[in-house]
Length: 502
Ligand code: HEM
View (spheres, rainbow, N blue to C red):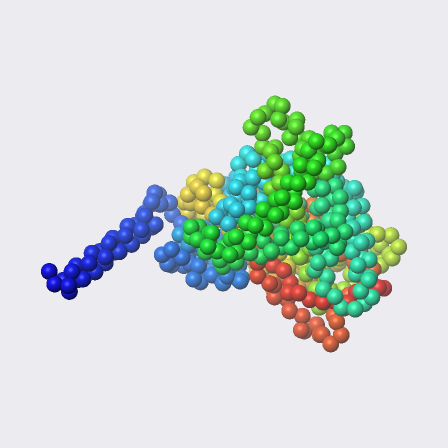
């Protein structure tokens, strides 16, 4: 056989192997499963492997989904890689799923990335009986430690005093309030989790915040979206390695503390969430060897409280101060109400809120406009379900899109404008709005909602009772950028302000 004939034969063989392997791969990737019994709503046409990721704005995915809902309606299918995701938009649809059909839509949706954060343990990415047990225990322990009560109110006011002192130390010069607000809010959770607060300059405390904030940014990076559709790439991705090493370091922090307390916890003097967990663990161990009260659940739950309880609330407060310097007339009205109801001498109390409709409306509007968790957290269907004329299989990931509720044009008069009037009637009285859903709703509703509302009211009114906030010299209100920085949470772009004692 001539050389040319051999080469030709080899090329044909290689090509045939390639074609068959590719066809085989795609057959198993996209083979029609039992899906014939299911009927998904329409959505944009999907590419092999990447699905619809080519049209997703990685920086503002919520905006792509809102635009798609204009075309496909309030229930549509979006392909995240190979996975069909059910997207729900607008107040009525999101409420129908999360509240009226709470059982069907109440399960947490998991991705390869979210599995890195606890493998079903803890609360945020926990599931099944373990999640139920941890959520119930955490809620009751938070209540025992004063969530929604006067004890935690006193703690928040004390912490706010420390924050006021730091703000005052700038003597009216411009500064970026991010780290200090983060530390103050974080300390409220630390008092609950560890039974103690940290100094704002404590290097371990700052490191912990840095690790958590870094992970919150990294989880939504394009690299991790790639990991979700091609998990075998994981160990090659720098962000993947970074998230893992950050989780490990955070884990060690909580784990070390847990081991320090393990043998010295006094059942009659429980000082923290971790103490209460250890006491419960010892009680359970005697009667139930398969208890969910094990070290991994303690570490993940404590980590969840620290992460979920810090970033969201402190980001909302930063939006609040930004709004006050951009809209000085609104700030003036808040000052006037604080002066009239509380005065200058005593600190605010939660019960003042009902007498302060304008401040209440401003705080609600800050939360609506800030839209701090724009995509919500992922849910999934608990079983095969019928919804809006479609038949959806068990385990389908669901996005109940909070952005589409907080900016629903059928519910808000001026959805894209910061407008406290959304929460006031013609007589200036506070009105509740049903489409106000920043904490989501249903079985997975934010566990820290009560605590977050207390913190927002007390920190905000204490800051505005003491200071008048303004833009640094030479910067005008029109220059203030209200577009958020991308990530799991919507944060304002870094800014500086001046805090002038009044
Ligand atoms: C302004 C502040 C906050 C906002 C906007 C917020 C928002 C949210 C949202 C949207 C969810 C997802 C709900 C869902 O899956 O449907 C969530 C879950 C959660 N939040 Fe918050 N949150 C805030 C503060 C807090 C605080 C202070 C804590 C801690 C005490 C906390 C702890 C949690 C936990 C543990 C979950 C997971 C609940 C579960 O899966 O069962 N959050 N939050």
